[in-house]
Amino acid sequence: MTTNISFSDFDCYKVAPVSFSSPCACPSRPSFCKPFPRPRSSLEFNRLRFVLHGQKGLLRISKSSSLARRHIVAVAHAEPDRIDGKEPEEEVEGGQQLSFQEDPISEQQHKKNQLKKRIVFGLGIGITGGIIVMAGGWVFTVAVAACIFVGAREYFELVRSRGITAGMTPPPRYVSRICSVICALMPILCLYFGQLDVTTTFSAFILAITLLLQRGSPRFSQLSSAIFGLFYVGYLPCFWVKLRCGLAVPAINTEIGARWPFLLGGQAHWTVGLVATLISMSSIIAADTYAFLGGKAFGKTPLTNISPKKTWEGTIMGLGGCIATSVILSKILCWPSSMISAIAFGFLNFLGSVFGDLTESMIKRDAGVKDSGSLIPGHGGLLDRVDSYIFSGALAYSFIKAFMPLYGV
Figure (cartoon, rainbow, N blue to C red):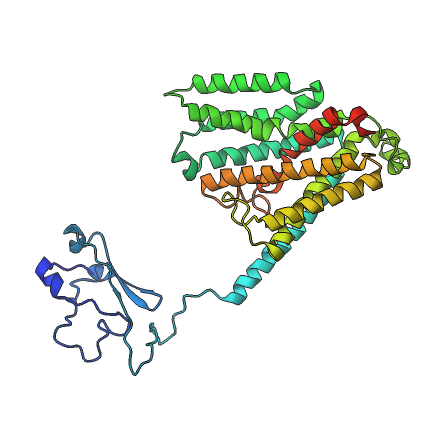
């Protein structure tokens, strides 16, 4: 409500608890409790808003009112009136009770629906991913390239968000699009040439030239965020192509490979790269699942401030589940032949899973968002689903090439 009053007039008014039934909560309305003057028009009346904050009345005065122009900000909190020692009920028009609490039943139903979506889409992604991994070759490479392109788009949207741009200058949109396309081409070039060194160096050089020749004044933050995006969502995921398609040595000790149907590629299709990829991805899924269940059941000690929901108890459960899955699958698939190699392989997959998850959580936290996108119902964005795999492919491939002689066969 807008009214022209002086400072002395404003001091004499007593702000009392407000209800919709009466402008003054005092039953007898004593002389020292003066009501505000009646509004001269409906427009002025609309400028006064009454908001019930819990059980306390809250009076808000519009910035365009005369009181605001006199640089007076008035926010009044008053204790509710007590009649015969009882708390007064909050009133609304029509005598209905005003409720501010969410319906617990609807909240539980929403959580159940989210869990159903998460399970359904998770199973769908798992089955589709398994078929793509089994196919290998160009099918696997193109699928990785598509995921990289979507992940790169989500990454640069996070970089351009308010939380991150408050302290840095993001790269222009055309630069982020060029970088996304380059990242998507990297796994295809990796499969064709068999290496990433020349591709990555040339891509970084193209990005640097594009940023330095842009209009205006280029910023180092633009270059650093673009180069990190090239490394994070472009270079690292390409190791899955090197792992699946590059390790083409047949897994001759695997009984499943010896009986693999000729129409599906025969024994030559069952390679060390296929077995290693299946074990690595299965171990990561087990790590995420056991960490989630362990955190829900026993989680008490926070792991890090980056992701407050992650706990040490859940992390230990995830480590145990990851190593156990790696060992069990190594016995079934007869690779690797050494128990120590299987345990070390599972441990490295777990490390890549945890730090990949924490890295994406750090980016989202600086961006001030919960999810990287909304592509997958119940899961969020694509980066939310594949963040555990970003570092794991590089660790698994490096372990097999450097520490397991003859690819562990």
